[in-house]
Image (spheres, rainbow, N blue to C red):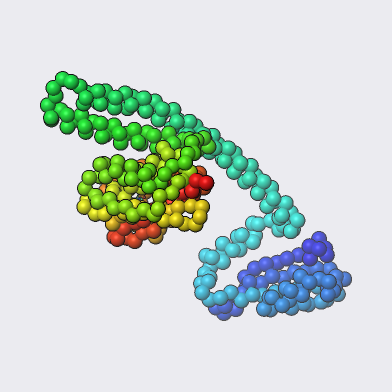
Length: 348
Ligand code: ADP
């Protein structure tokens, strides 16, 4: 009707036949308007609507369409009143106007979203800047504290074994604090895109043996077992890779009981990469946790209360591995244990 005339009238409403309701639409238009086979919409409507009738008189043509409403809609006078109000109050609109109005709404929405995005980017930049400044400011006093503790521990004056033990505890806690602050700094470097690498050729087995020995010292109650393939040379940033191993071995110890085994293995993946696998006999994790484990600040629900942490380690670890053009993944079974695997490129 919109295509053919602007004089036709549409009545729309509900009709009741005993307890059955139908949605009914009546369109009246000029008697000289005739439909041809080019009016595909008309013929489709005829097929789609269950009851479709054309009444032609000398003064007007009328199309009556009816669709029965299923009983499960449970129409009652209140609902019908609401529909009626809607039909009465809503302005009749043609397709062109409707599209124009929707377009205007969409444009408005998109301007609002752009503004929202701009504001959240600004807040995010400020947050990253704050983390960077705060972690720099925290790092200096912790480093000084650590230096004084070491000086006190190595003094020539006689100190009681009790005091020496206390100093060792201060040293251990300042190391933990320093690691956390370093992780915060790394996160802000990742966000700013300036995590830098010094790639060097490193003998893998020697490097791993050293890292495992350090971790065995920190986790004396776990049994570290190694199984390496033949010695080979990899191309890595030694300090950053140390961080990866410290995180994965540390987590293996943290999320498993004392006197369980931590296995470190290497295996050639292809002639370009080697896979390093760290397996524990710990609590393992759910499938859901496995999909989110490398996200920033992610921590599994079941460890929130039992283990301290900020969920930064695996995010940084995965970034370092992928920056080395390697892959990282986890295999795990709840209550049995987890294996964290990552690949490292061979040097040529
Ligand atoms: P954090 O240990 O500080 O929470 P991570 O980023 O190192 O941060 O680890 C993120 C989460 O992954 C942990 O909170 C824990 O739920 C899970 N997770 C990591 N390593 C293991 C593991 N070896 N066994 C079981 N769960 C682990």
